[in-house]
Image 1 (cartoon, helix red, strand yellow):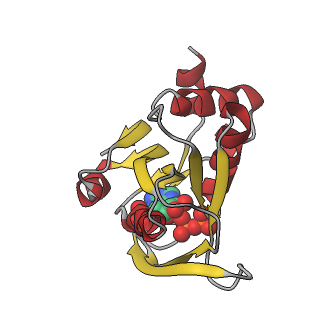
Image 2: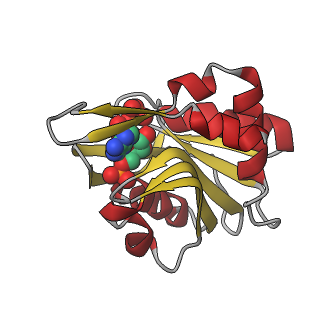
Length: 173
Ligand SMILES: O=P(O)(O)OC[C@H]1O[C@H](OP(=O)(O)OP(=O)(O)O)[C@H](O)[C@@H]1O
Ligand SMILES: Nc1ncnc2[nH]cnc12
């Protein structure tokens, strides 16, 4: 099956970017045209049909989010790391599995009541996805779910996001 083959391409890199972290590297999957298509199509199947916009998390989330937007006719809004946007509507700071960071929402990108799915490659602690949800909600938009290719379940991200629905194509303990 195409999706199984795609997910078999995920690479595990121990001790990156810090000792003790098992890094889930999607590079081989993204580099394979059939695997990329199978993964994006499978992720689309998990998305709430009310969704109008993909909010894609910088930077690996941009790759998946833009493919989903183009393939399935969603608008794409980039949630960016600081210092990149000329006009910022809102900023949220957060911590993630191996550090801390912030995300910003571009001014004027979302309207109240729009239905938005958060898209990223990996869900670990959920800090990043929670910040993304807060940004979307700061604009009065509605989060329909968080969709990722890989979930590291042992880090509790899904529980941190509850009751927001989370979909993942591959879950590691
Ligand atoms: O669930 P969390 O613990 O918050 O971790 C998940 C986040 O970590 C990675 O991003 P990273 O900040 O490393 O940025 P990158 O995409 O620019 O590599 C990944 O792409 C997710 O956005
Ligand atoms: N273990 C991990 N692998 C890849 N990306 C991540 N982002 C946060 N934790 C990660």
